[in-house]
Picture 1 (cartoon, rainbow, N blue to C red):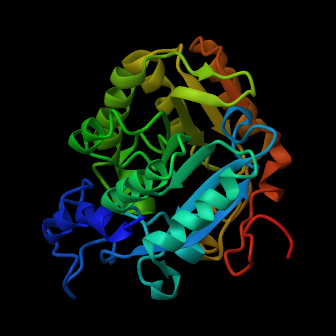
Picture 2 (tube, one colour):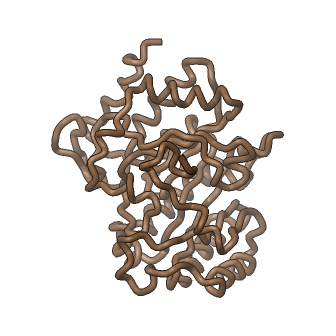
Length: 314
């Protein structure tokens, strides 16, 4: 297989406009854009992950590809070791052949689903990976696991590429999104992005005989301590602007990263009262499809990307 022929996907990075930052950066040069990422396959981990929703990771797990850096800079990010754009991640650079080889090794274990985590700034690299895997005769389910900060134009181009959209909807409060994620326009941008995902996939999440999602949309929302009204507003938007029939994953797994220890609200974990209130509102808005978490789940979702497997003990 001549992998070099697939690298033509990267030519568009001479003028990068794939995410809402719209930097127009030439990522082949030293003048990088907001994500501080060039044209390489900067990937911090390719691993079997069993911590997603049951229809995503199933019984065997999902092959997750964790890209380095991000087009959002959330102060509370659980993946801060790799998502911080100030961190030098050149050591994570892999060749397309090496990436493909690692994915195939996992697919050959009987896992037929691949997720791209934080892919919004890595669209050309993601498409090259998909083409490379398909060229070897594999046809897994492709999952776009995104923070929701995507352009409608980019998503339209992915309509025939991505099988399952797994987006966050973090905020409906622009002041909060500016302060915590450096994106005042997040509510508007993510709202439009999710409407496009819904147009493509509808409200049906198609599940195969093995219990894995094959096609559809599942929206995630992480409830933040002290910001329950934001969560209520997020659910209101989904119910009224999208549909109460979409699948929603309401997450309680927040834990305070070191970077937010000085913030009064975010320096603590979520309380049972806070989470239960949002679950009640979810029911009041008529949501009947989706997932909630145990409040103690924050103890189970603390990746360490310095390990061989970030979610397991070495």
